[in-house]
Amino acid sequence: MKNSRRLFLKSACALVVGASGYTVAQGPLGEAQQTTKKYALIHDETKCIGCDACSVACREVNNVPEGVTRLRIERKGPYGEYPEQYFRFTRHSCQHCEDTPCVKVCPTGAAYKDEATGIVSVDAWKCVGCQYCIAACPYQVRFINPVTKAADKCDFCKETRLKEGKLPACVSACPTQALTFGDLQDPDSQVVQVLKHTPNYRTKTELGTRPKLFRIGSQDGEVRL
Amino acid sequence: MSPFHFDGLVWHWPIAIYLFLAGVSAGAVFFAILLKQFRLGDDAYRSPFVQAACIIAPLSVFAGLGILVIDLTKPFDFWKILVFYNPTSVMSVGVAVLMFYQAMLFAWLACVFKKPLLAFCEQRWPRVQRLLKWLVSAEASITGILAISAVALGAYTGFLLSALTTYPMLNNPVLPLLFLFSGLSSGAAGTLLGGVLMKGSPDGKEVHFIHNIEIPIILVEMVLIFTFFVGLILSGGASKIAAFRAIGEGFWGWVFWGGIVFVGLSLPLAFNLFMKASAKRKFSYVAVTAMCSLTGVLLLRNFILYTGQMTVA
Image (cartoon, rainbow over all chains, first blue to last red; front, side, top):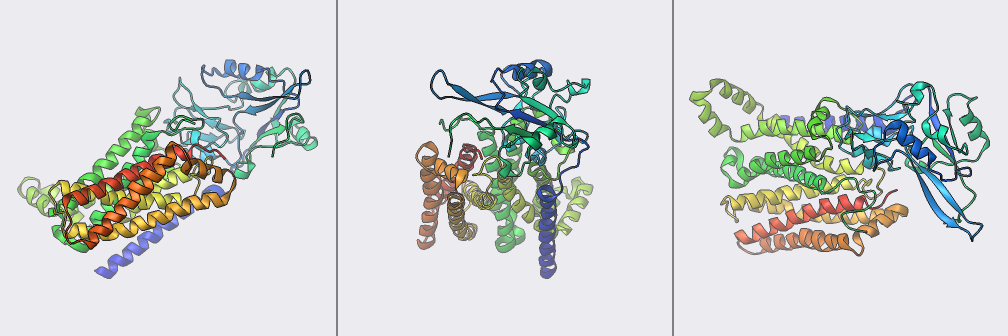
């Protein structure tokens, strides 16, 4: 009796460890989900003038309520002496990671990567509002939509402008053409051409997120260590 | 920086209380099983300490889940978590563990109280009695599975936070172990406090048994907290900043050194060693020691949750 119980406990432990190990290994080591298109965005910080036309257009097109935003341009500066003063502008919005921390942690699968476009989206109906994704996003771009009570963020206008065959609202609204949008899988697309010929960077890549928001760095500003 | 409101703060104190209650439940079950298996046997249900653990375990896990549901932005949609599962989500796996744990918990409770329950059902509900007898025949398996799911639940409370790569202090492999061991010690403290309040003897064999296990658990907890912060500091970068921001000067520094290290760990350890050396245990010693442990663990959950979210990678 005693030995059989011990054997049972041992095998149960082994089973639990094996099962949990399998699930965990499936996550980070498994291949990223293959999508037919991989939409990406480039923010050219050398062209951006910080006019906020992008965030205004986004709010209007996607019906984003007051108090929250899918897109924000952060300003740093001013640098230099008057009249030679300048600011630095950084885009703060969903990076549409290939290896998505938000999708991985979502308990219901409300956060998902769209198979056709590679766009990271939220199924507002499935979302229960546990806010795990908001905490898991290292770029801190997610928020609870005060109207739907679901997690919300930039989806490259998947449900609005892209459906009409147009470019995302921010890209069309930009007066200086600082934003380039397109498919990374298409070698002839403008995004691929720009990325091939211009030095660019992405943020927090050390976390393994493989973001698809590329940035062309401003030459202005201070040198920081 | 205000201790309770700052940029990047997503999860507030209700989550800390939920993590605390889940740990208490897992710990109480763990010690009740040990008491029954190694000290009391089939008469365990007569012991006020086992009775206390059997009340604390289901109530605290229910209260914790209730707090969790109320804290959702859509509380009435909570059933979607039970219907849709995502195997890569720690929260989703945790929900499955919690459901399984509760089912096993009630099966085990029926086995613990089999004598009075079988007697009660004798004439009234023969069908219920047959079900009970079937459960009792599988008691050994139920006990084993429940012990494993209690440990899994205790560790899950830590994995829930350590899965967040956003925060270098939380994304730490020691955290699940720390939460598991502090959860076990809070369960032991809850069982002791409940037991003496229910007129259990403060010098009984249950108290001696639990205190003997509590001393090494407190020592392990101290080693884990030390490893946790030294590990962060040696990692450098944002981890180091996060560690110093948490245990350095300020509100949370006081909570850590005064509330967790002194009241939560050092005092219970000193009291336990003193009680082991002195001849007799009194109600006040047992109760005060248990309350110190519980306070320390509750503070630890809040401290880790808040200071963890202060520094972003």
